[in-house]
Image 1 (cartoon, one colour):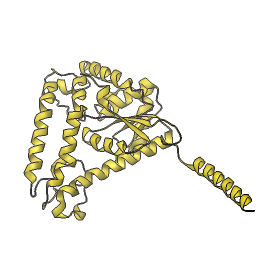
Image 2: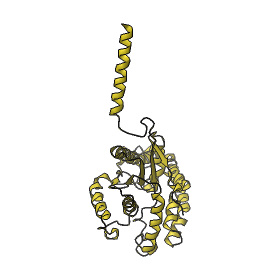
Image 3: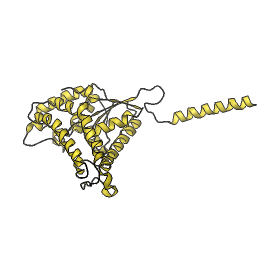
Image 4: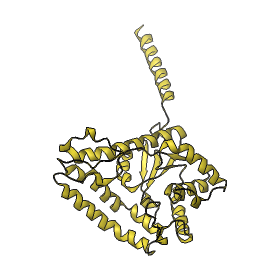
Length: 295
C-alpha cells in the first residue's frame, strides 16, 4: 500500500512538473537554451548634435551618410533579429507607419521631423537591410538631465567628475565637428568600455556622495518624494528607475517576439546601468558594442 501510494505521488509530481514547465514563458534559462544575446549601441543623440551652421555635424550630408553606412556594416555583423530604439511605446504606431513607408522606399528620412535621429539613421536602415518587419519602442519616461543635481555637501566631487568626463569626451567630439573624425570613429569612441565606465561611475556612483541638497525643477521628475539628506542617492534613483522600466520593456518585448539577438540603440548614459542589470539576468548574455564598432 505504501509503495503504491509513493509511486502515485511521484507520478503526480512529475505531471505537475511538466504542466508547470509548459506554462512558463520562453526565456534563455529554459532547459539547455543558449542565453539571448543583447547588444546596446550608444552615443550622442545625432539630431541633438546637429548645428545648422556646421555641415560636418549634419548626418544627412552625403559624406556622413556614407560614414553611417560603414557603421551599419559593422553593427550588421552582430546579426540582430530584433532592433529596439529609445522611443516611448506610445509612439509605436507612428514608428510602425514610418518604418513601413521606409521599407517600401516611400519615405525620405531627410524630409521628416527629427530625421537625423539614430532611431531612423541606424534603426530603420539596419532593420530594412536585415528584412525585419518592425522596430520596437522600449524607452520609458523619467529624468533626463544630469544637471538637476546641482547643490549639496560634496557637490564639488560631482562637478569635478563631470568636468573630467567632458574633458575626456569633448576632444573627440570637436574633432568630429571639424571633420577629422568619422561617424565610425565617433561611435566607436562613445561605446568604448573606458568611456562607458567613466560615465556610469559619474552618474551612478559619484552622485551618491552628494548629500543635504536639492534638485533643480524638472517636469519629468516628481521632487515631492526627495529626502534632502540623500539628494545624490535620490537623483540616482530617478535615473535608475527609468533604466529598470527600459529593461522591463526590453525583456517583455523579447518574450513576446521570441527574438534571440537584440540590438538596442540608446543614449550612452543608460548602457552601463543596463549592462549591469542584464549581466545578472541568466536569460541574457551582454555583448559589448566595442567588439563590432571600429574607428
